[in-house]
Image (cartoon, rainbow, N blue to C red):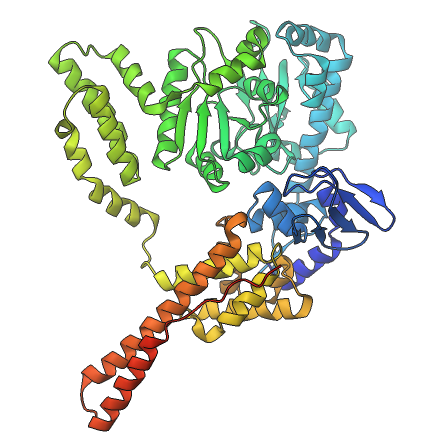
Length: 589
């Protein structure tokens, strides 16, 4: 985690207006800026940032927080992502455990080279004869100048010396160009290809996808940047930085195969679309979408056999995470890009409104591959699909999936009941794979309360007062939870709210920083924050009440007490039983 000194330096350098203005249209009015609040729907601006202040406030919904809170709530970043994003933006080198992190000196120029390379490729496409040949290809495919400029599409020249001369003119040595994946063995990695920048989820360029547009171009249709410290194919969701906000807000995502498919959909208003990087759609990419709360994914892959195989592979990964998978059926020979060009956005929306459920897609797909008119064929068909269903890791998903398979194949449930009976086995397997640590209900309960205070407190400051009325640090069973609770109350007492950077700076050691970071990984429902806080307080108080009763009962049952001591304990037990904990109502606003 981060040293206190570097966090304080970051805090002092953050300009909140610079962080918020790319996401909220702010208008200056005297000594403050105002705009429409991004956290609730409104027609008159009530979202305000004072000049020079480190906090925003909405007088409509009460949203309040600093730069970290804004990025976490608006873009669904983790705490670490928000801190590192701000450090990158404001030029702060974070320190870990009191020591400066050792970084490759070529990293910063490599990142800069990627941005400059994108500018060079874009200029070369728009302003050279060679580029105009590529432009004609793009125009023929229905991409206009607005699209090309918006997504900074470019062209890598045929002559490798042109790119090398441009980078040399910008004073880039070979090492950062090599680190960025722009050159290989002192030659440009990309030649004679249309260039599509690939961005990190934070928006900066981390690589390129080069698309051939002539039959004479050597190699596959798409060539992506090779693996670099910035570019890890299995972790990248192409188009995510354009779509992240809406994906998190609507808890759904469209997934396509190609970059042009994704960009076309985004331009047409389906800006909750991402693409895999070739065949490398990995578990890390799935985990990222699950982390931001995605509940439904729509797979709009090509209509050929490879596209359908990809739908099964990617669909399985999401089904394992209990995310509903829907297949957007593309006509034969079509992909989302060509379909939008020929049929328009409304026709695509109609297909999106009537998708095929993933299990129905599996049944149809394998029915076309296996002759189900014979008993042996039908048996193979059921066994193939049931094995895929049993690979899902949530027992209810497995149970319901096998039941639906039995109905669709018109066979008794008992024919697949072996899989249903193994639900308990699946549960055990999943619990073991998630963690080898002992399940600790006390830690989970107390962590839930701390999370609500940290994440919902800035929006509803009366949460701090309400919790303090009912809970003391003595009510916590887990020492680290008690310590963090005290730290939260200390900061609230000083500034009447919670800012995340000083909160992390205030904790005593790396263990507590890691604990805080772990708390902040999980989302909460802001709408139910007060209700959840009250419920969690009640659970903690009832747990403690029950524990005190059990302690008295154990003392009586242990023996070795005088008659008088037993009577006193019995009276204490009865008195305690008559006074169960009560959580008061929220004070009226």
